[in-house]
Length: 121
Image (cartoon, rainbow, N blue to C red; front, side, top):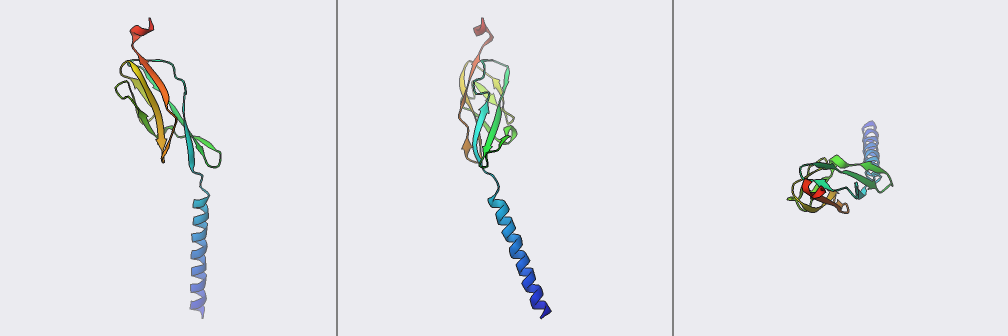
């Protein structure tokens, strides 16, 4: 009889633990959007850098800096390259779109214009 009670209690505890795990998983906020800042960067001179930040908005309304956990993309890598920390480097004259993505969520693109030093004069 004691063994049966122990088994029933053990099963009850396992069911409770499983239920708690499901509740905590179901309540985890999900990423719902990403915004890249600055949204209107100034012109970037060839060879110089521009730092971008990715801000994630979650299903519970909270926002977090997710700069180092997104995938960064430059649409025209010959114009500017962007590293895993959101640092873009001007390579040649032109305009490219910079965006960030994570978990299937993609930010709106930010246009970055790269110019040569001579174009400043």
